Image (tube, rainbow, N blue to C red):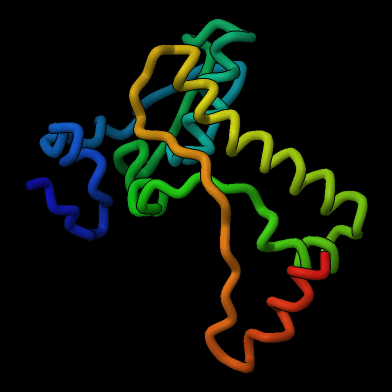
Length: 150
């Protein structure tokens, strides 16, 4: 039986049999690239993957302080979702139209992960499902009501 253990690096390296992966040596000297991505979490790796269809992958530099896909990305328990739960704050920060456009795009991207894996024949145990918002105390009622109304 495979039991998930939560730790500082996430469970996916262990699950994939790669627990001995070590960080690469620090970048030394001079490096040249057309695009530099700082942060090898899922967003950074996803950006590098899609850019590699547009430019020479050798011209993309992906930098991370440790091992790509660990840290918060590796500890996310496999959730892949957009930003709909942040609608109230996004509207306050960016205005309704910009917030809605961002939310729609992130929802498309979240669903696109499954299509991407399917197109490549990858088995990533992706399952698109619904989302439930729950207020656990009176202090959360207002935010939940605003989210539901929007």
